[in-house]
Length: 326
Image 1 (tube, rainbow, N blue to C red):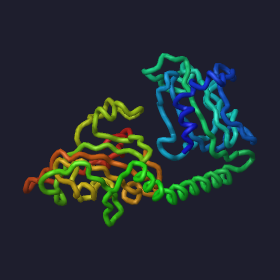
Image 2 (cartoon, helix red, strand yellow):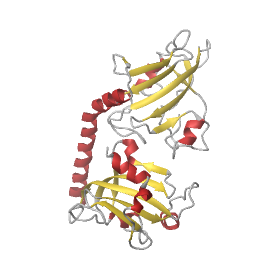
Image 3 (cartoon, rainbow, N blue to C red):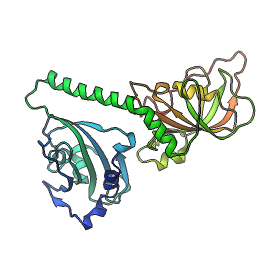
Image 4 (cartoon, helix red, strand yellow):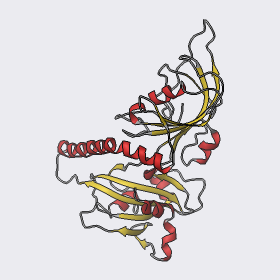
């Protein structure tokens, strides 16, 4: 991860004192940070890039570095002069730049909602172009084959790097977890009391799920959701989750972990992808992505004799409506 580029995205305006924005087409303004030789991006090209989106007040709205993977874009025809695609059309593979794009135009022409926390005229995007696959005169099938080959290589790279990323996370945070036979890592931050749940018992808990980068992707805690950019969903009730233990109602690592905890326990699970969403990923989880869950067990509920088993909820981080439910 290029930390200097993250800082460019988070505080791009801080650089104007030493390097001024230049006038681009339409109402666009830009600063080129790195300019490599190569063909600029053209309509139809496949682009892998990192992007940080902020307001003029430096409020971060999105940051692809949170996901530890590039994002993928098919370059399109501009919707208006000086839009995002016009910005990308100024760049080639290896380039990085910051662009100020007119907010009103983004809202009117590209249906991008205007953030409530800004009074500025512009949205600010910092791009770092990792890879460009030019469409050129290739047939659709040949071009798609080259894109698929690149994506396959990216997934293989993520697989190869996963164990090292987990080790790095543990070392950086000075964690010495217990490791189960399956490969689940866990650190007990507060010991609970009483018996651990049996298979089929319902565990009532609060949880927060994040990537190794610290980016929270799901939580049952209202305060956490509200302070995480882009996460809070006013249509969702934020409340403790009730989940049956040991019956495969959630991802394997989460399911296994439930059986390790007594009432009152607070624990951090570091779950390798083989015990989460594996090589397929999910709507919001990339392939071979290890996950971190912080959980607090509020209660363990024994089944009432003769009653039906509780319905299995969706796994944390995977909802049918917006990807943030449980």
